[in-house]
Length: 272
Image 1 (cartoon, one colour):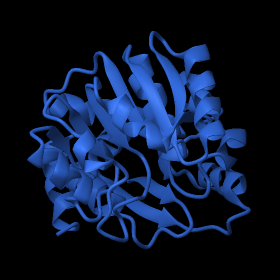
Image 2 (cartoon, rainbow, N blue to C red):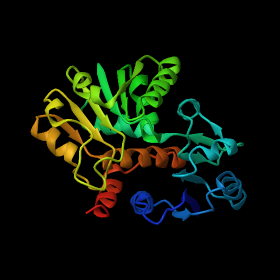
Image 3 (cartoon, rainbow, N blue to C red):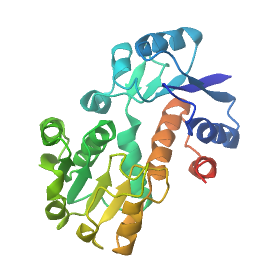
Image 4 (cartoon, one colour):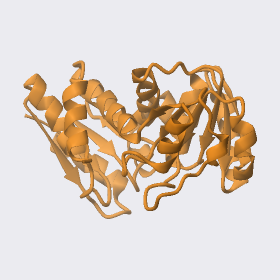
């Protein structure tokens, strides 16, 4: 039996176990997905212990995504983002990936959204970094609006320096209306909308030519998505990004095409 799991602290709220185990069951793979919750200062050591125990793969979440970089060989996108959320122990040293970037791209692809033109990204934290590199690597021009302008500017510089094709720039939050006027894609990578019914984006800045992804998945329909739909925009809820980052990890570990429908059904059953 192969053992996969999630490394984080806390991990009790995670939806990864039912999602991945639904995939194993659908493909009749002899595997289990478990959770590991080491002390917050022991992330790298936990990866080394998992390797010794014969764990086949790990997902990594807060607060360990940066800490585990020292215990793996990150691939190109993980190194550029500066965070690892998936580890494959079949190599020596273990390989670290960031599947959040691929998860965002595949979520948009699932909804028929072409990642061309101009994107606006709200937030420059961990999810924002993954989104910024993902969008720029697809060739988009990315405007990053962040509460701390300097952090957005710094991220934009990192992205522009190493992006496959696109470029990025940093902006203040009060420029969102201007940025969105000619935008094709909007991504909210902040937690605004999770705890209360708020949107990080002015409602009157939304329009029907936008495709809007909100990385928040609880609630599944945020105020931003409701207002975007009312404006005629294409909307993508955060569970799609969560699903596809898991699908990407599943496929890297198993070498099989993930049963996306089964994994999505299991995920959404736990969100309702």
